[in-house]
Length: 73
Length: 365
Image (cartoon, rainbow over all chains, first blue to last red; front, side, top):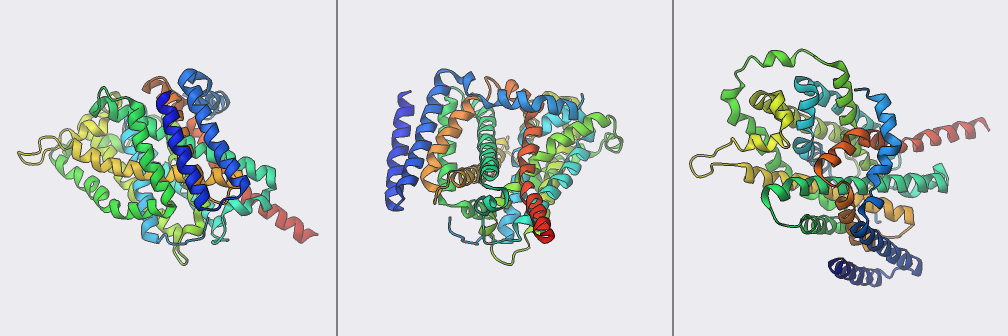
């Protein structure tokens, strides 16, 4: 978890630098930081409860039966 | 994003050539041999034709407006809600695919060459490099592919020469018979979206240099890559046999273990894996770059660069949770990924369809 915090901290610093250099609008800054926040929240959730954030389960739930009909083994 | 328009036909063909076989050669040939044995050759050929046709059809619409991004003008065709939904689904698909490729690579590389190294460390290192390439721009991946494709292609072209004595076998007769039509259809269906992933090219049309014969480059690159795939598959089946090829986790790697170079290189698989990794890295970088671009367009951002490393972190985390172990990952992949991929890839075709229907309505009015 500490590695995640340090890593995301570095990403945040670099992101701030890029936004300043590109003279980004307020909206762009808010959205960019929100993406970093989402990535951090996702990674933290993945660390503690990985089965909650596994999209393959949802993909299999939706598309598995359809594929089963198309490709009958 | 600025319209740079620097990708040449050669760069495009090089990337597609490497893209087509880089992951398939390592991760798909084994299961293909297990399901259809000798019929795998037909699966690869049919999937190549169908998938490449899908891609060139998507480019036909995109090339009508060569200086505008579909991710930007698509809202005028589909309406904001529909367009945003397509962008989000497509972005998720490409980021999920990046995570999948990263996970497959760590599952292969860490137990084989880096035992006791945490997989997350390898994933972070690889993804940092891929994110840096994406940060530099989509055209950089194409230039990198142009630099690498000769070495990669040459390696896989000369590889069969090392196995010439083994190619004298009565097994060739089995290649002309189709034993199981159901399995042939199933595996062809699973392979088509691997080629269909190249629909990503339709989202970056303004990056292509003006006057390039884009669709021709796509076909040439795709067929050249397919030739490498088919030759590797045939080699694998003839040398290892269909049962052993299907039983091994990475049969192409096992095949490389039999290559020797004089007395000083007893095992060439380290050299081959190093060169092969360049191909995988190109594929990972371009898919991640497109995923990042589509995410930025869905969010309405002026520039995708500030969110590149954040999304790289997301992809690393995603790669770790996709499955508990390799067989579970393979199960998810076999049971539903092909349909999910085809669904997302065909979402792109809503743009030309709606555009045509609206055009007809305008003419009727």
